[in-house]
Length: 288
Image 1 (cartoon, rainbow, N blue to C red):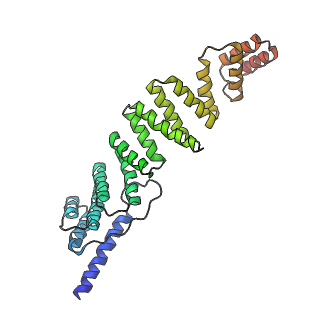
Image 2: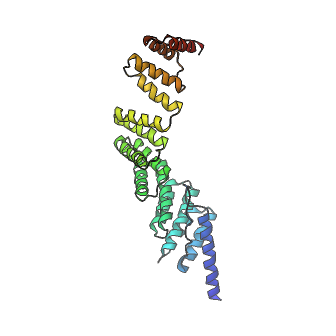
Image 3: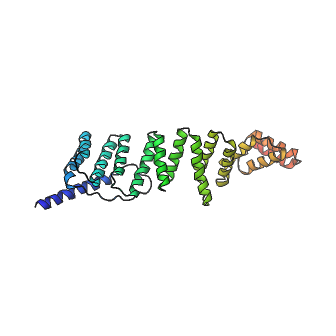
């Protein structure tokens, strides 16, 4: 009879734990691996059951006390305790507490590497949200080194460097990312190139910023990227032939819109002995 009672209690606690885990243990970041089901030791079943009941009753101080109570805990017990601590912190909108609970789940030693990586991805985003940019970078680089990073991680790490005004490392980070993709014959993400160009500008490297802008146009040749490049070229000293080519490109990419550009196009064509093209540019400009 006692054996059956102990078994029933174990089933009850395991069911509660699975229920708590089903609620989630943090923000969702991409596909998640199913975590193994913890087996709570008999010695700690009572306190964890009381932690669950206190959590349901919104008696958070008791829930915390019960979740960390007990002795001779197995790694399963420790992990489940931190799951409850996470839920308590989430119920109170305590982001710092949630992060400590997620780190506790990782440190418990219960989760396999794939599930640990999921929690580190959550921690990276939460650290960035808390404006703890150094920690966001540390978490993110750990994931990148372990090849467990998704595109969001690269975004957070790169933007964290910007927030810290560490443009040298922002350049190094995005340049490495873009170069690696190009070596593999893959197209870098547009946002990666934009941030790399911005980092070069902030770092004062105009030539590299210009080269990166040209890459943006090459990989993403729409009217917006052409506009940025062509208006950058407009600031240079150009001879009449170069000006003519510039305004032809502006026309071809849908960026010939301002009256002064139509007149400049007409002048460049006339200077090169192309009155027909000059008149057409002038007439189009007047109609526009």
